[in-house]
Image (cartoon, rainbow, N blue to C red; front, side, top):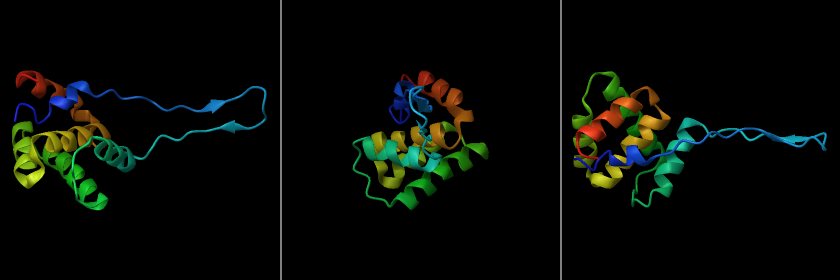
Length: 119
C-alpha cells in the first residue's frame, strides 16, 4: 500500500494560459481541459492497462472524493482501489488523478500520507 499513492509526490501540475500575438488581430485561446478530461488523460497516459470505460473511470475517481469527503482514510481508499482489481500502480494512479482533478483540497493530506508511508 506504500506505493499506492507514491505517484502523488511526483506529479507536476501545469497551468494552460491564453496565447496571443500583438502583430495579429486574432488570438488563440487555449482552454484548460475539464476535470473529467484531465483525469482521463492522466490515466490513459499512465501506461496502466485499465480496461474500464471512461464513464466507469470517472465514476471511480469521483467516488474517491466522496469517500474522502465522508471521512474515509487514505489507507482505506488505497486498499479499496487495490482490492478492486486495479493493483497497486493503477490504483495509486487513479487516486492521484482523482485528488488532483476532482478534489484538490486533499492534495496536502495525500502528500502527507505518502510521506508517512515511505513514499
